Image (cartoon, rainbow, N blue to C red; front, side):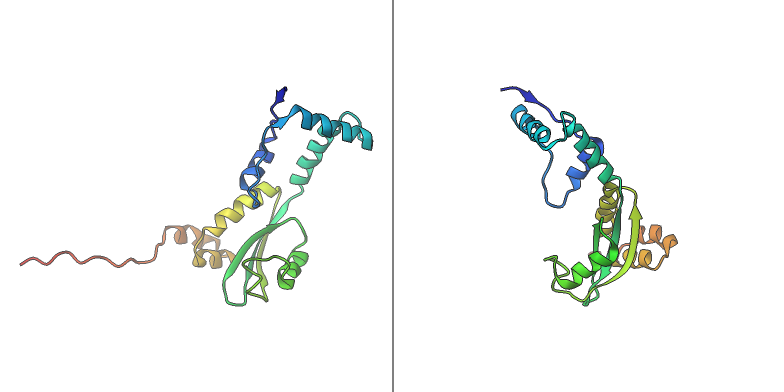
Length: 167
């Protein structure tokens, strides 16, 4: 059987690396591509369907997305991304449609949102912000952008060992 390697667009590769469900784009067998092409022709997309679909995927990826931060009922922060409207996403969290962190900490309120041109950028920012300390997240929420570098260098004081006593 012939093997053809599907080489995704760089944004698709980045999206695969950071996808939340853990799935990645893998090599496709020629038979799979042939079946997709036959189905596309029978549906009416013509022989260029895979190319059109790739263009649609790239276009959808460039629509943009939001990074958002929610404050939960217990005071903790949840960082997420969405392509939907922010009101719709907030409603989904408050309705408990997303099992996980916010489901048991309702009601939640949105305290920060930022739009990104691509979903790849939004997901990268989400991963970065999730690694931040609470103080750094609060500085961003409050718009204290000048404090972010200071908070990046700040570490909580650690207990220091006493040197062994001499004598």
